[in-house]
Image 1 (cartoon, one colour):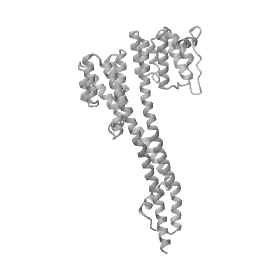
Image 2: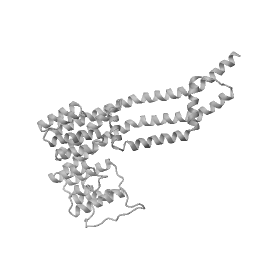
Image 3: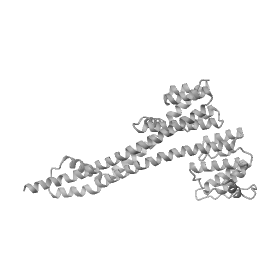
Image 4: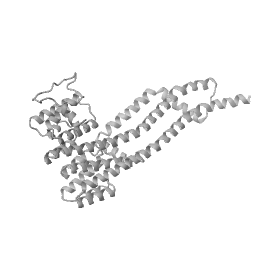
Length: 378
C-alpha cells in the first residue's frame, strides 16, 4: 500500500474519542493476530513516520485498517495512552501478549534517539527474518509428522481391526501352533483389543504427566538439555538457538539498547533455559567489568567461532555487525540442515512403513502357507 493510499484512508480529523468497545459473552474480544501481522503493521508504521505523518495519526490509520476486533481494541487503548501524553513504548508495554520485550525496548530506544522510523524498519526486518526461519522449519517438518501419524494410524487399524478376524479363521482351521511372528502379532492384537481404552488412557496420562513435568524448573532444564544433546536433531536446535541469540542481540545493540539491558532481553527470549542461564552468567561478568566473549566461552554453550567473533567485535567496535554475520551464517546452516534431514527422513519413514506393514502381512500369511503345504502333502 502506498503512502498516498494510507493518507487517503486516514480519518478526516481525529477528535478525542473513545471507540466503542464491543464485549462478547466472556468479556472484550482477544486480539487474534500473528507475528507476521505485527511485522506488517510495524513496517507500515515506519513508512508513514518516515514520510512525515505524525505518530498519532499513523496509529489511527492503522486502527482504521485493522480487521480483527480484538486488535482494534488494543490499538484503540494505545492511541488513548499516546494522546494522553504517554510514550509510545509505555503504551505498548501494557500489551505484552502482542508486543514483546524486544519490541517495547527497541521502540523506547528509537524514541530516545529520535530515530523511531529507522528502529521500526529494523524491528520489522528482525521479525520477518525470525518468522521466515520458523516457517521453513515448520514446512520441512510437516511431511515427517504427517507420515508418522499415518504409520501409527495404519498400524493400529490393522492390529485392532484386521488381525482379530484372521485369528478367528486360524482357530476355525484348528491351527494350535502358530509361527513365532504370528504369535507375537496375535499377542499384541489381543492386548490392544481387550484393553484398548486402558492403553489409550495410559498413553494420554503419560503425555499429560510429561507436559506437566517439563513446566517445572527441573523438568524444563532436563527437557532443554535433552533437546540440545539428542542425536541428529540436537545440533539443529542448538544452531537455531544461537541464530536467535545473535540476531536478537545484534538488533538490540544496533537500535541503541544498552548492552546489559540487551543481555537481559536476549536471555528472556532465548527459548532455552540453559542458554538463558549462560547469557545471564555472562551478564554478571560484564557487570563486573569483564568482556563478553570470555564468560560466554566459559559457559561452553557457544561454539568457539561465535565467542571469538564476539571478542573481536568488542575490540573493534563492530559487535553488532559480527553478530549479524553470525546470525546469517547459522540461518544458512539451519536451512541446509533442515533440507538434509528432510531428504533423509522421507526414505526412513517409507522404510519404516514398509517394514511394519510387511511384518503384519508376513505374520498373517505364514499360517496360510503352512496350511497349503499340509493340503498339498495330503
